[in-house]
Length: 178
Ligand code: A4P
Ligand code: MG
Image 1 (tube, rainbow, N blue to C red):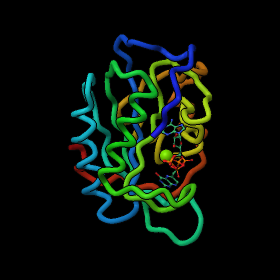
Image 2 (tube, rainbow, N blue to C red; image 1 turned 90 degrees about the vertical axis):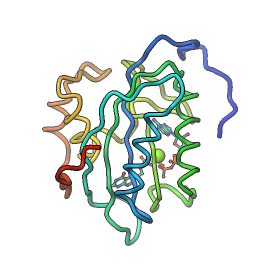
Image 3 (cartoon, protein in one colour; image 1 turned 135 degrees about the vertical axis):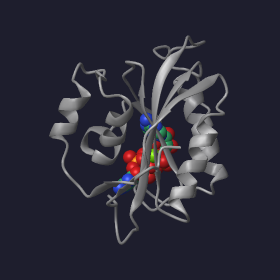
């Protein structure tokens, strides 16, 4: 958990912002974990869950032999400033027994802030838009499902970003929208 104070460039006491959260799991019971995490995202303080993508099975990106991931994206409306939202997401990860064993290693639950309105920040502990999202079809495809007309903070269209994204194995699980 992080204790740094608000950077002056971050929104303080908030109006409503739209944020997209990426969910990923490849340890334990990933489908169940992601579905439970979706219900927990509906209970975030000062927030409302607006949409959930389907669940997707994806090829793991990371070191060594790892199981497939289950990925999804959730849209929320929130009054939490970005750093408070990050803390709330990390608390949910902890409840799911998340252990941090290194970058891109297997995990019970990973929750990433993909987007927060049109905000662009590159802070040591919080980078928005998420630094890897444009290279990951397991992020962009579920995002497209719930935000087809989205314009990204750099002015590009999500549909164009999906078309340009490197292909890796990705399967939508049928009837998996909660
Ligand atoms: N952090 C910075 N920006 C953000 C943000 N926008 N949202 C910081 C959330 N956290 C952010 O994260 C490390 C630190 O990133 C946090 O303390 C936070 O301050 P972490 O969750 O502890 O570590 P990590 O997830 O291993 O690192 P990283 O670099 O965030 O990895 P990613 O990008 O989350 O990738 N393959 C498939 N198929 N599907 C996946 O979901 N996920 C990963 C993890 C790798 N391979 C995958 C998948
Ligand atoms: Mg992460």
